[in-house]
Amino acid sequence: MSVSEFFNMGGYAVFVWSSFGLTFVVLLLNWWLPFRQHKQYLAKLKRQEMIKSREEKQSHDASS
Amino acid sequence: MTPARKKRLSLILLMVVGVAVGVGFALNALNENIMFFFSPADIKAGKAPANKDFRVGGMVVEGTVKRPGDGLTVEFDLTDNDSVVTVKYTGILPDLFREGQGIIANGKLDADGEFIAQEVLAKHDENYMPPEVMEAMKKSGQPMPGMDKKGI
Amino acid sequence: MFKWFVTWFHRFGSPPHFYRLAGRWLPWLTTLFVVTVIAGLYGGLVLAPADYQQGESFRIIYVHVPAAWMSMFIYVVMAFCGIVILVWRMKMAEIVLSCSAPIGASFTFLALVTGSLWGKPMWGTYWVWDARLTSELILLFLYLGVIGLYGAIDDKRVAARAVAILSIVGVVNIPIIHFSVEWWNSLHQGPTVTKFDKPSIDIRMLIPLLLMALAFQIYYVIALFQAARAAILQRERNSRWVEELVKP
Image (cartoon, rainbow over all chains, first blue to last red):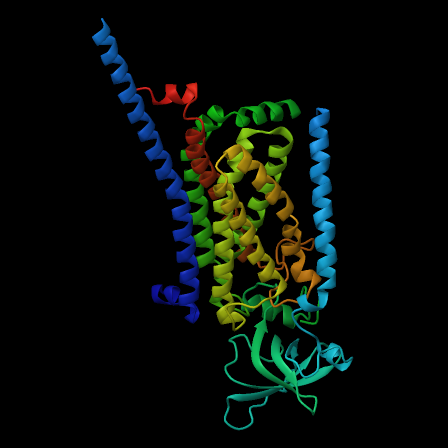
């Protein structure tokens, strides 16, 4: 089987490759979106925590 | 399990059974409408609607495919191994259309009892195998698995 | 055995444990998924012979059938979570249910679209209203209903109970999808693999199909863990363990 024959899929290339392509895109999105959401949320919580601890430190310094 | 949980669980099960029974009755009542096609035997028995579009499904009888005239019009016999109906169709046929293939045609009966189709769809069976294996099975005279089920 | 299961159940039932375990398992699961999916694709697209009837177009089976199986499997998981939510009020089940819905909806969407792309060259049409196709479309609407209902209610514990009921009621559709091709005449073919007889598919075609099904199963766990970690963090943001986690 040659490479061009493989990509031609016996004349059904449009149907076969669009099925596989679409599946790939949808599965990738479903994996990537929650991955990014988790990462962003974790970063946000860390930032808030940092600001909070800095403020606590400042108020502690000012009072002493 | 605590009694409260037991009660909740049995309520849920009751709900599922209730919904299942309801849906079952509904589907049973709608049975005729859910049937996707009629067989040639149904037509012969007069079960198919007259003066209304419906679908007929069956196997294309070997050696009956004729192309009178321009080549776009085809005529063939459809069977369910019980009765036969002749189908006339003008248009593009699906790739799978061939003699011995299960197909479904959409249209209505004319006065001569011939089925005038506006659309022809091909039905494929649930068997998947390479052509060599198919040939070998044919030669050895083995029956095709699952082929007997509904005629098509 | 039972005791082990109960311990495991309780560990997974606690959000911080789930969060940590999922994080630890994810790289391994991802590796396993990549290996399985490559083997399945190679087997399905290169090694498997063309079909006697459908030629090369039958290869759509390698995404269509696993996607359709997953669309039903995930709904059953959601219904099971629904029972756990209503009976035991377990927080983790709420998260698994709400995070499964978008994944299940994607698989249903894929099953419908790839089926349509398969139907056009073989049947001669993208869509017909036969029992199998219609019941699968109803499944997509059930998923969208769960996603919409969960999003519409602000109190997530109340929302979880509402979608639990919808999931449990909707599970009635699952056997209808499976048996639709046997109960009624349909354009869609009957079952090839999931029947009591031996599968009516050549072994060289069957093995890649099972590999792809396994890969999709692993993918579901990966996508679920990923989404659940995000959801857990959001829900438990004010708890002690999250504070510890994000401490600079």
